Image 1 (tube, rainbow, N blue to C red):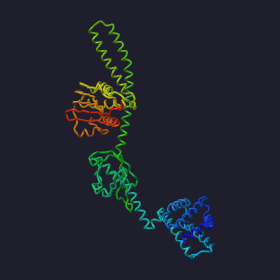
Image 2 (cartoon, rainbow, N blue to C red):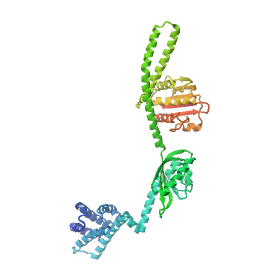
Image 3 (tube, helix red, strand yellow):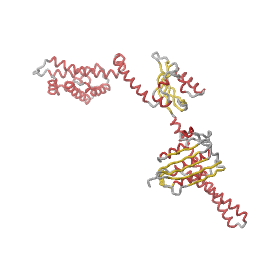
Image 4 (tube, helix red, strand yellow):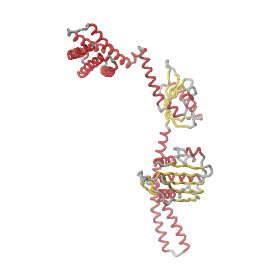
Length: 499
């Protein structure tokens, strides 16, 4: 029978098409364009043939989605859609009745066509019902299905989000805790569920007052409260966060708790501080260059006058004093020259260079730092140091940062020993001081951004972090050896260049 019906459709295809098209044109011509009506009838006849042959109604899913999109835009309701499908059914039967050589009972053919059309319309109704909330509320089974899908979707968001998503009930206890919260704070879901909401608060009165403020606001308002604050992790770290707190009502609209979305903004804060610090350093660099220029000109004049007096002087005592003046002028000139070199905008192009030249420049710069009171700088440079491919300005920054830290460690009085050496694969630079030293806990943290052991205002905590990043980009490493009261040694390992 399937084969017969397909033959009839092919035989009377144009008549069926025209009759179905005309019925739609008469009833709904203004709501659908000419091309839309043609496309609909063609695709409908095509899918009917496939369903008659295969009875696989999953093949119709894309077709149903397409016509749902078409009819939704034209604002058709289910009754009108049913009528359009009925137009197609009647078009088929009217043309089949022309055929006099039917070997099957026409009622059987009619029943088969009706079953296909009804199944097709039923699946369309499912799509329509799922899209209409009011209809879903009247159909409990479909509502349950949609709620289950929504629940899975929300659970997926809840447990895969990198942001902490937390639910707190009206008894101030955690009832939901996602993977994002676990990653940020270190507590597992098992450890947190049932605990009081103050678990994450740092130990200070202002945070407890803040929690009271949040509860009061959220209970009274349905608007989302956004707040920048701090929270405490399982290991005791206090991190900057942004809270988005929303009221959670029960079925009667009464307060039953709140949802809290927490973003760890540590990285944002660090980046902002880096930007601020970079801007400060840029201004300092410009200022240093300007000062060097202003000092350089009169210094050159003074130096010329001293040399002129030296040539004309015949007094030995005065000559010694002039020599001392000249040596100090030269020292100031070197400081100015190194200041200009250091404040020059850095180049980020790697070049192959003798690394000893860079460390010598770094030592020359820090010798004149204000931290230096009575420091014995000793050096031991490997005359056969291999060439390395680096960004000189960046490497200079690394050496200067570590040397300045050494000066701070000895409080400007003591010994600093700089040594270079190499093996077959790497070049090494070691910087040793006999200062206060560090314990293991501090050594583990010194390369963290913004970690500093210095007093407030005397250190940014960026120097070693930036240095570590620069050396890592060269595939090298910084090794730290230190003991309390026994000084520290920083060993910088840099892979040798291919040449």
